[in-house]
Length: 253
Image (spheres, rainbow, N blue to C red):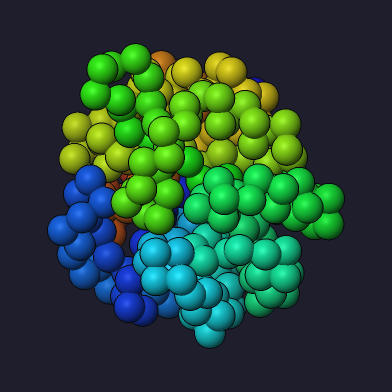
């Protein structure tokens, strides 16, 4: 049985950790280096760092901050936001990232997925998918530029395509559930998890311990990502892991 992972997410805006609801109404949640250091000690399995306005602002991720976070943590560390070329991948990996997440650039240039996978290995390539349920309820569309632009591409079809292109992991965010604390979108998570063979990280909607259990047991996720619950100390990672372990979920204690 594969060990399930608990992953805090640092959404970065103007050099600060922020958290919003449904991708808007951002609240300040602290200094990225300080927050990363806390999670490193708190038992997080990995850390995700997303520069959430880099793509929409047409700029690159802040290298200095990536370097400082990498120096502060000793757990796998994924960086995303504004990554548009294989050279950007190389830069992030050189500065200490273990994996690189792409979203907008992957949609605009799917070949970037395969080029990066060929050069650095699939394990380094994470494709982030921001998905929102279609108004007619028939499925989910993917969005780019931090959830601003509907691509009118089906999320399941895109997930299958990114796997074929060489992605090693999918970071799947439900835009409908994001920041609501009403639980992960289990229907969406299960649909993607059961139709690809690469790991799927569920993101968006965690509000209590039970939601993490549901994401693993019902959503079939390989990892779960959360932000505000951890940032604002509503839930400690070690307590969450003990809860999951007692329910038979394989986690690293």
